[in-house]
Image 1 (cartoon, rainbow, N blue to C red):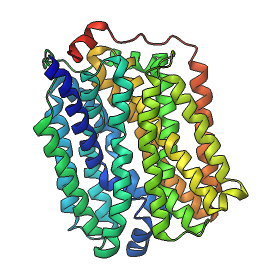
Image 2 (image 1 turned 120 degrees about the horizontal axis):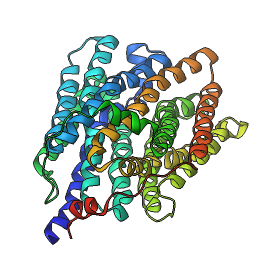
Image 3 (image 1 turned 135 degrees about the vertical axis):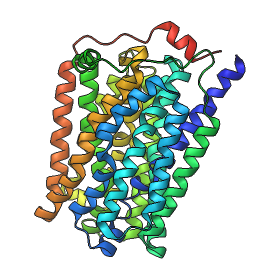
Length: 411
């Protein structure tokens, strides 16, 4: 039993690593923006479309992955998805130009569809509710952690050897994640794989009407838009507005991703201790990101020092929200539908992930500045905040059943 309790930390480590490795290349696209624009002759809108391409298939793929995760062992579902990411990126080194790169990223998105909900479910199944927020925060920190390394490494690789070499690098890192998860992940003792029928339509509609789930999905869609905007626009903003060099701007993005790692862990750990579940931490993040982006709209935001501080702030809250948010999703779902609930909530986020990056790029191209892009993100976050607070008075989902936690966390 004690050995099983210790093994949960191995599960947490491997799930975090696989998350970071699978998203490594896509999360580095923003940092490579200057090189990609130079080598492929891209507009800002086309650069944003690269990120959207990687997120397009998960609109449906996350729902499919959720069904698979409720019926199959996460070990093979996640491992196979990360393997698809690796193969697609490796093969992408042979494709010609921008159109080929878009096609590669569509396949990458299909593989990544299983990694996000699968890793979350694997961690949730091993940790008791009293520690689940912290564990989810650490696991979800894998995304900005991978992005920070990608922002540091991929621009150097692309600058020295070209964008195709960056694809190969991303494929190799994703392959390491796939091998690690398939080798090390095990289900908790006492938790069997139960064959399960496809999720009935009535269950899906009930989840969509559940106040806690609606509140969570609205907040997620607003905050994921901010995360996309920071990832795509930080380097370009610092380079064009604050007159920072390309290398220095990329380092600021690395630091921003680093504060995101801290935010995901710290905010998720805090959400374990507040008396109203995870919602308070998510609301705090929405208020904080509105304040941070408002600074970028002021004349002070044109100063390199002020802009850097604003982006670090946005990293902590604009990336940190995901830890408590994903813990809230798992605790809002029926115990036997956790995978589907994660897939559903994350697929709603995908709508924003697909639509927002090219829209922000188009606004920047048409206006010649960044104010419309920041203004749009502020408006979306405020709308999500108002809607979330209004539904906050509705019935909150109960904590997971005790027997679920006892099985999931042997001691």
